[in-house]
Image (cartoon, rainbow, N blue to C red):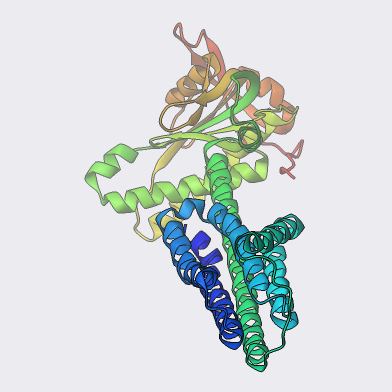
Length: 407
């Protein structure tokens, strides 16, 4: 609203300047040639009053300001025509009034507005003739010439300032638009960043592009890491230190997974779950999952030795790796999250519970897929209806094959 008012801010003072000039010219002509009649009085009265009436209407209804001003331009031109006739078409004031009126209309709203204003000006001439008869006796008056020169100076200075003000508003608007666009881009980046934190990268791209992720089946390799003793340490020790240690480990798991081609799927308290092959599986997913588990175990072993040397707390960990089919999709509640379902996840967590501290438990299906890049030792068998008697293995690195890092 304020921008609209600023857009028309100079119309009122410019109209005052114009009507004052017309009153002065009409008065000088009437003084010089003794034409103080009823028509003169009516014309001057309208010129002195109508700019203030228009301004009052415009301020009461700023939403209609543009429509009011466009219609007032036609009335301005009509009054110009009457003043031109009242001065008997004296050349200089006629030229000044007609030029200023048409230039104003053209500058504000283009050629169509200028043509409308020209028609209104002709109507003003005809209206004056209808009431006072034709008076075509142009006469030069020095006072009128001087008044015209002063008016032209004041008018064009005001017009120049109006153009400057309009350009300043345009620059201000463009700046505001650029800032708004930059703000929207920043918010989009933040939104995309949040999606990439919540979802696997390729699925986050799909979510950002389409606004939804349909549930789908995937064949993946899952890695689960449980920080054993976390809950007891949290209750018995310095909770801030324990949580800082956990966060440090989880960030390291992110880095190791990135290097091996895995992504964090979720964390559940003290359990970290990573995934390979979501949404697009590759033949090396199982080997990458096992290699990630071994890298994590090596990292945790080095970290434990360092922390023990400095008298700091340490957390033991168990790691499980399992491959199979899952159903993945977005849980759309008040806070969206990506989750997976199926027996593969249940088996992964059962392996994790069966895994001793400091070891890596790998399912039979993952061992088969990973091949001979590792040394395998049968470690046991999961029982119970949920797991279905699945053999699992402990694992060591082997020199017979090399697991390449993710590009």
